[in-house]
Image (cartoon, rainbow, N blue to C red):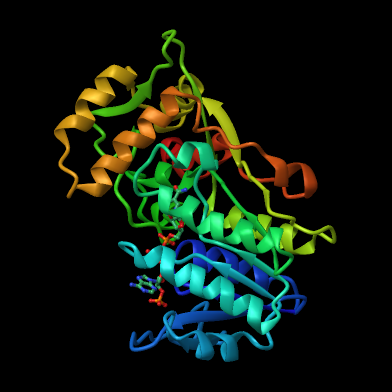
Length: 323
Ligand SMILES: NC(=O)c1ccc[n+]([C@@H]2O[C@H](COP(=O)([O-])OP(=O)(O)OC[C@H]3O[C@@H](n4cnc5c(N)ncnc54)[C@H](OP(=O)(O)O)[C@@H]3O)[C@@H](O)[C@H]2O)c1
């Protein structure tokens, strides 16, 4: 079964999904869609060297349809700045329908739709989903959305052992969010508080487990039927997270609590042009409202045993402390 991954050149999520598909012994064949005009080179030995790459124009419906004719499932991991993120994925959806593809999954991999509605940048995912849901309702295609919480790989930032850090990051290059272990002399975690002053929880999933969950979803015989098939590597309270960080880094990790009113005040000071900073602040507000927990619907339907935060910290930080 051919599975197209739009944006599958991504070294994080794309690599995770392609690699999981390649490990199914030919049950699924990944085909990566990459935009025309962008030159990628995949040296021998690299993940994508032997994977078919189809160069596409996300704005040309006829060519997209031709590209997808022999494809059964289209998965998007596109990340495009601006409104084109919606346009390209809706075009892809309609092309998949016309080409007769069976299933489609948009580039979600974040939180529930209610939580995403509270974050300007992520609300685009909900706009795409409305179009997908409409296609599902009209029987045009089967589809699901796959929230996974925060990538656990953020916890690899600051890992002192270079080899362990590279493996922990798994291609991830973003800066720290919420958890700050990058400075050995000042490690801290921003702890959002609920309105009643208690500490909420958050879901984190290791990037490589996302690919495994996607294979499990492809294996499902029952229609995805427009469901939110959430995956959860681990769901833990910020208090437990800090305890694990302290245990495996061997450092004192400060809890810097913050309330929603304080975050709202912070948000006021962030100009709309700084959309990443705004997103991070809004995501922290989401935590105050318990929106950072993913319902593990796909865990319940699969036999994937994902990496927990404890296992992750032990694997990448613990070995360093034993030296
Ligand atoms: N849960 C989390 O903690 C978390 C963290 C980060 C990201 N995410 C989510 O994961 C998904 C993928 O993110 P990512 O970081 O893996 O993405 P990424 O690597 O930045 O981009 C994915 C692919 O999108 C394509 N692309 C980029 N700009 C484009 C453009 N202007 N037009 C068309 N295609 C373009 C590129 O493919 P080509 O160059 O081959 O065309 C690229 O490889 C997103 O939905 C993102 O929101 C979640």
